[in-house]
Each structure stands twice: as C-alpha cells, then as structure tokens.
Image (cartoon, rainbow, N blue to C red; front, side, top):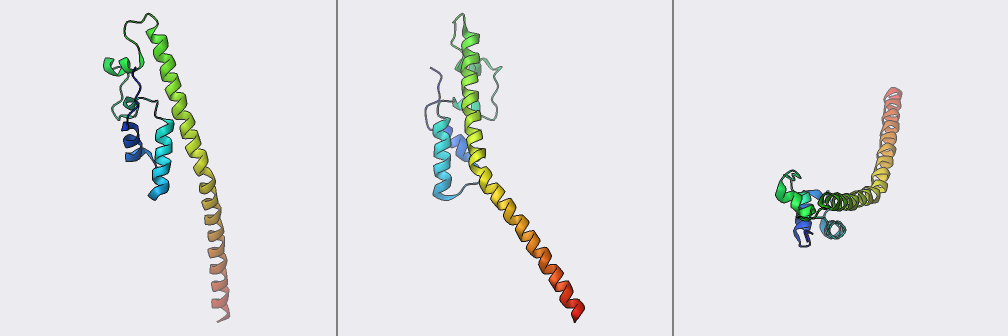
Length: 126
C-alpha cells in the first residue's frame, strides 16, 4: 500500500491550494481537484515534504524488494504526472476568464482615456 485515500487531500487543497474560488462553485472545484489527486499520497502535499526522510521514502518504495528504487521512481513519476495534468487543467479552465478580464480592463482604460480627452476639450471651450 502507501496510497492516500482518505479525506486528507481535500483538506490540504481547500486550505490554501484551491485558489480564490468562493461559494458552491469553489467547493465543486476543490472537490474535483481532490478527486483527481486522490491517488497521490497526502505526504506529497505537506509543507515539510522531505523525500530523504526514510519514513517518507517508504511511502513510495516497497521495503526489501530488490527493485525498490525502480518501483519508487515509477510511483513518483505517476504521481507527478497526475499533479501536472491537474494543474494544467486548472490553469486552462481559468485562462479564458483571465484573458476576458484583461480585454475588459484594456477597453475600460481606453474609455477612461477618451473621457479624459473629452473633458480636456470641454474645459478648453469654456
């Protein structure tokens, strides 16, 4: 064994790793991320994660197996892939909204600039 199946992943993700989402949407996003990362052991998300600690390394490597290092590398590679895919999905799902906000900000800036020019022209006329 060595998988992290309980609810601990959700706690770690929703307490600082879930982004700024609020309300039910935020809980749904956190639940989705937690589900996708459910197979990744909780120890990976801990602030003091240290793979040189024998007890931490034991989570990834079966004791006494002659091929333990290869198994550990394969497991960690699999976990890393799961985290990377999840992060890419989260960034991708938020990128469109970010760029829409950026375009709106640019438009607003242009409108403010035009308003300032119009006010300056009115002042000159008065």
